[in-house]
Amino acid sequence: MSIFFGAGQKSGSVHSSISMASWDLAVTVEDLGSDAPAVTLSVASDLHVGGVILKLVEKTQIKRDWSDHAIWWEQKQQWLLRTAWTLEKYGIHADARLLFMPQHKPLKLGLPNGKTLRLKACFSRPVFQTVMGICKILDIRHPEELSLLRPIEEKKKKKDKDSAEEIYDLTEVPLSSASRPLLYDGMPAHFADSPEMEAVYKMLSVTQPPPAPEVIAKQYRPASVVDKAHINGRWLDSSRCLMQQGIQENDRVWLRFKYFSFYDMDPKYDVVRLTQLYEQARWAILLEDIDCTEEEMMLFGALQYHISKVSQSEPQMVSSNAAMDDLDSALQSLEVKLEGESSSASDMLVGHIGLDNMRNMISYFRPKRLTLKGYKQYWFKFQDTSISYFKSKEESIGEPIQQINLKGCEVAPDVNVTAQKFLIRLLIPAPEGMNEVYLRCENLTPRILDAYQNVAQLSLTDAVMRFLQIWQALPDFGLSYVVVRFKGSRKDEVLGIAPNRLIRIDLAVGDVVKTWRYNNMKQWNVNWDIRQMAIEFEGNINIAFGCVTADCKIVHEFIGGYIFMSTRSRAKSDTLNEELFHKLTGGHEAL
Image (cartoon, rainbow, N blue to C red):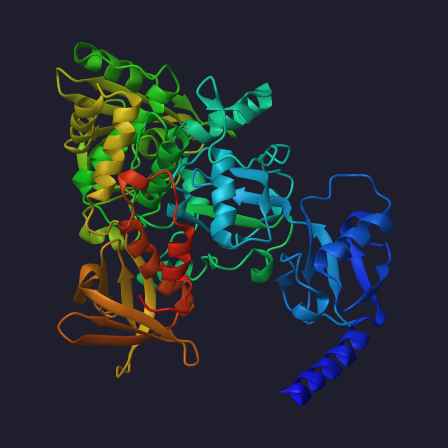
């Protein structure tokens, strides 16, 4: 026993003498500038990271608050956040490339409403915590429902080079440790600091006007379920930090609702949350990301128009007796003149009612002198800033009889609800002057008007809630698609991930092959070596698949995330069980 003890002492003394040897460690300090040389420190392996930071601060001689700074290890793509750990415990040697910099850095954030914010986000903690911090600044409750994803690359046009994007700046908002920011006049106190900050809050909390058709036309539209699946491959990993995923200072990411399981939605406390969710739902419908019937489209269009109209004024109830008066005045106000950047005719025809790419039978009449000819029916296509018409629906796949460019034309509605008169007069520029054309809607316009009359009395909040309820009732609501290859299969298929189930879809014909519900799931796990996911359901049902359009970690996180959402209860709604979220989504443990 005594020999063993002595040997241990000897070994310990040798180790101690080695660890006490000094060596040089170079650390780049970001605050000194990109051209400044690295700061060289004389350290020993038993020096803890906190001691390294203390030496750095003393040597730079810069007087400032260093509390947000930490060391980033470039080769290992790792933050040294455990300041009590020694260099030896981390495995750091003289060849380590270390960078001392702030943990919170500016980030460009694309919002669901299409606007862009610039704010300070945490680059050192898991993305789950980063989103919590962002949502705290924006006053969005239940941040676990949202996440960040890489934006779709937009093709830059030459003429767009000079058009500077408006970016709302929140980088001066102080970082707070409070669970929810202090409120002032119904909004977080930091938004009450200046008129500029109040304008940012208005942008966040008030619905945007209906986008012009040319704006809609510029947006990326997934042409197939495979395109939608590729978008889901862009979600960031919630358990790793921004730096570990290649996101740098001032990079752009999107903030979106990822999990379509909305908990404890209260208009009193969720103004920004409701507004941004409405915007995400509206864009999903405008860009045909989710299928809906023509009747549903009419109702969405009427609600969008009403929400836009009411949000521009005081959000108050419109009496049912005044509904028709409001309708007439609203339609009369749609008279527009197209010149340059002003509203387009399509804005009146499709933008306000959300009927982009609408097709229908409409009567067409072009007044001529000494003619007794009346209206003729044609199959019309409304698309972008033009109208095309054909003899019939069947001939609409070919060349149109005529295509009318709406740019520069004058549009005026001629509506008399009592007389069932629904006309649109177009004055179209021509070399000889203005050509006059009348469009008479036989069934389209009354249906839109009927839909509008049914919602015209709703308050702003009720209208937004109604819009979201109809959206959530759509058959394809909440489906996130991933292309997968099931074990034993020779072809790619689609996995639809919904809030309460998984759906196997035939990629060729789009039919649902099989549905599995989460409440029948016993366990799931990932074989990280072959990147294959295995799930076991009750009844001795086992499935396994590899992911084609996304990393299997994204699918794992979707499933675990939805199971986490189902564990929330009103009794503990104020406390977010972050540990459980990471346990269910982290990818290393089965349920």
